[in-house]
Length: 353
Image (cartoon, rainbow, N blue to C red; front, top):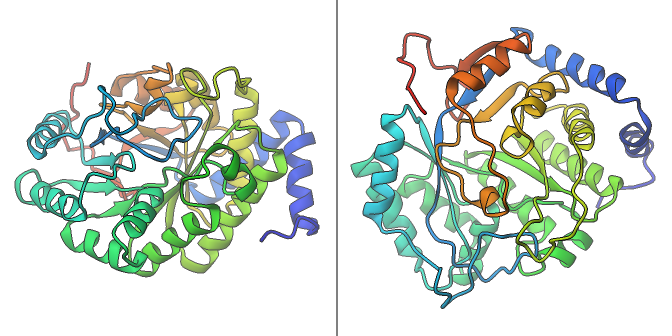
C-alpha cells in the first residue's frame, strides 16, 4: 500500500496538479533526453488480434465485449488467426498483440495449442494474454500463476502486454471492474512473469472518476515493481473512451490532461525505459506533441484495432504519416521490435495504405 503521506508522493501530486504545462513538459523532456540521448523515436508495425470477444468480466468501460450466448460473440479459428498473421507479415509486421475476453467456454489446452500452431505455421513474436487473462486462466483452471505462465511460455508466448491495468487502486477497480483481477493481483502476475524471465509492458487508462492521487499511486506502484524486477519494457497511458459503454456520459478528459499525465509518468517511472505515445486515442498531432512531454516511442501502426474503435475512436495513419510526425517533432524515426531493438534501415519499408 502506498503511503499517501510520504513527501515524495505529495510532491508528485502537487506537481501533477499545479505545475505550468510547459514547465512540466520541459521536465519530462529533459528526463527523456537523459534516457535516450540519441534523438531517436521508435515505432513498431504489428497487428492486434482479439481471438474472442466473449467475456464475463463485465467491465463498465468496455464497448468491445459480448456476454456468453450473445449473437455477436465469436471465437476466431486457428486458421483465421493464421491468415491475419500472414496478412500482417506481408505488411511488415514483426509481432502480433493477441488478447481476448474472459471466455468461460475455452479450455486451457486451446490456448496452448493456438500458440504452438502459430509458432509452427506462422512464426512471429507473440505479445499476448494480459495479466487479467492470466489471472482468469489461473482461477478458471485452478492453476498457480507460475504454472500458467510457464505453460504459455513453453507453448510459444514471448511477452505479456499490460492490458487491463486501468487504475491500480482497488477502490477504483471495485467500482468499474470488480470481476477482474484486483490491483495487487494484476501486479503479482507481472512480478511472476518477470521472475520467470518474461518481459512485459504496463499501461494506465485514466478518466474513470479517479483522483489525481489515484493516478500517481498507480505510477508509484509500477515504479516499485520495476525497481524489484526490471521487467517492464514500456509504459503506455490513454484516457477512457466512454462511448457505447456503461460509462457513456462520463466527461472525457482533454489533450492537456493527457500531456500532463504522460509527463508525470516520465517523471515518476524513473526505471521504466520507454514511454509510448497513444496517438490511436489522441490523434497524430497530440501524439506528436507528447514526444516533447516524455515519450520516446510512437507506438504501433495498428494494422488492426478493435477495442478502442468499438468505443468510437478511429484515428489511423500510414507509416509515412507516423514517420513525418516523428521527424517534424525533431527526431529520427526508427522501426523496432518488441524488445526495442531497432530494425536496420536496409529492411524494406512496407507500403501500408
